[in-house]
Image: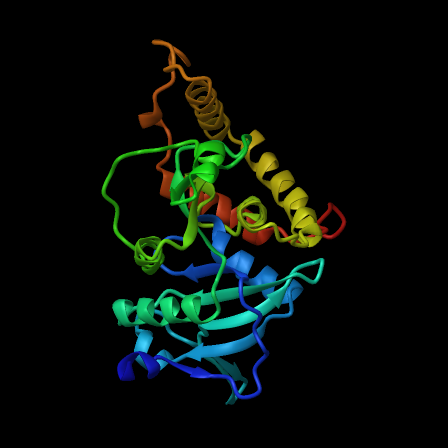
Length: 309
């Protein structure tokens, strides 16, 4: 496997990895509505002390022009170069339970070779289960729990947690290819797709991080710390509610989405004439609503009050 070996470098002095651990896969890229994946990666890196095992080669897998690294400019000189990172690490949950965390950017290139490498890791470490999460924008209200679509071969999880089960064609991600190939190896795998309110999809929505963490815990038995995200959630929702209550258009849209959500969850179609007199065409587009909410949230800072403003 000479080409696959070039995709990554094993970390010198890396941790000893027990066999039979769960693996969690979090790849940012094509779909990350509400910042679910990027937010959970950041949170897990801050709370689970991941110890790198292998680091993947950006020059092989990453299109720099599509996702440019960050460079820090300090007045008259450059002080720091921050490349993207994709790594496999050994992490520990709040109880000290170990698990494997594959996290970072979704590869732009060499998907098949990347899948081969991940399958090799799964085989070498005798991985017990694989769980991955991503998120998409959907016309659902933020006032209801985030729904999920579940895929993979863990039918107990699908039965208990999949609220939307379409038959459709979608643009694939590297995560989809991994799930497809892992399932072919009869390794237990579950993929959770979070259904995020479309008008909040371009913001960093704490509910998505909490929902993603919850699904990981359900699928793996891990215990993840979420206190900090809970605090951020309360403030975020308070600001969103203030914005919604201040706009008749936003308020009407949310009420309509609530009615449709409740009708779907109760197993019935919305009654003809429900929300009579309301026409979605009279509302701003989803992009306009998201941009307005993002602008509003960006101008509000934690702890803002009348005196500070």
